[in-house]
Length: 311
Image (cartoon, rainbow, N blue to C red; front, side, top):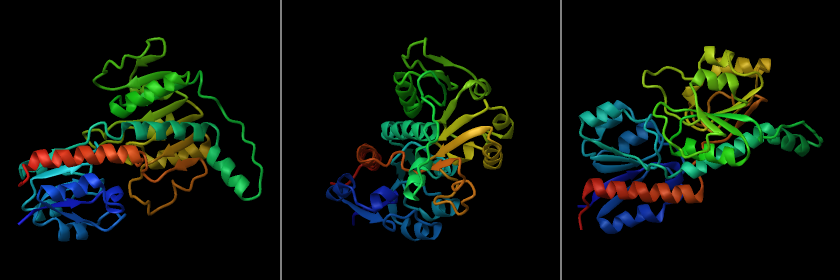
């Protein structure tokens, strides 16, 4: 009997990927969740029993699901985030966790730059105005000469920093490890988060949630941002205090919030997403042909190496 692998990322269930299908040649049965949809807990409880491997997306993995996954040996993410996984519980059950490190970095970084320009030039508002018969001419701003705060200098953050500097901006960054990014000191320096928020024209988030579960960009920090600041979030929705953010947008203290992530996806409340100062995309940072290929290839290889497949 072949070993079963569960595949749940929306990008892979909507259109099965050759690197996943190739696992069949190595003695695995592939089980897909509902095509193009984030699986519910009930669906996962039905699918995960008897699976030894799981190529997982961003769907929440609850303790009930882990309890039902009696045969599970490895969860292989097609990305780097593991906030949706009960890591301690999985480790206690002996389930290995693998990530596709760096696979989607370029895709997310390029979307981040796109969101910066969208906010600086009000592209969505102008486009929407023309489509309704208007001719809005909103004065924009150029990125050259601006100060951009980069919070988190992993694979994505460092790529964003390089791109921003190439566009002529200054980068002030925060990362607890302060890695050497080999960037010119005339355009790059490290600082603490509060200084970044106070001094930057744009701030972009590329970091995990704080380990203590607190909100990184909380009310105090939002109230202290540089007036007119643009905030970009392609990392995690819960990094930002949504209520305080909306207040800052309403008052004009913050010019715009551009986000690729929501606490619930798709959002059940449109209070934030429909705000006129919010630019929203549907978690597409790593959803490019190239990023999907890289992430899928790495995730599939991680599964094979962890499972020692049958011949």
